Image 1 (cartoon, rainbow, N blue to C red):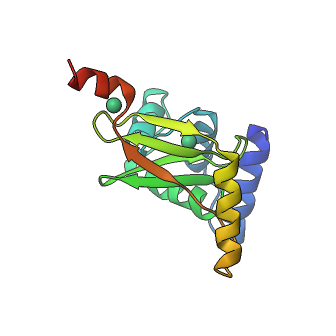
Image 2: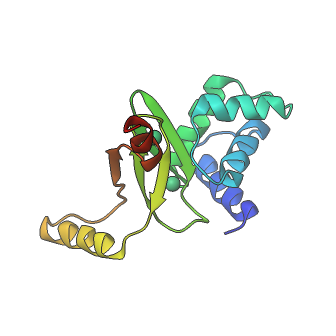
Length: 147
Ligand SMILES: [Zn+2]
Ligand SMILES: [Zn+2]
């Protein structure tokens, strides 16, 4: 998916909710789409302000939440910190998180995805979205603590 399609979907979502498609919202959505990894609202806001985009922290936060509601972004929360990433334009994946340094590793596991689909079926749930977040200590931190 290209950035303009992503932005068009966001515009459509905003219109459907009777919300304004402001320049700041567009810039925030575009910045998230371009980012290869995961980011919190504060870091994304800082980045945008460095580029001269007047993105107030509350606007950044609200826009990221709207992107999640629109199904265009994924959010996961760890230790009072909410991290966001674009959900479209990238293959589906899950995350490992190092509780020592905060490093995030992405992985995809086909048997796990198949099993998740079976669980939905077994429990009679219509699938919407899912995320698997594994906590642990990364190899770098493990190596550091054994020295
Ligand atoms: Zn670590
Ligand atoms: Zn990710």
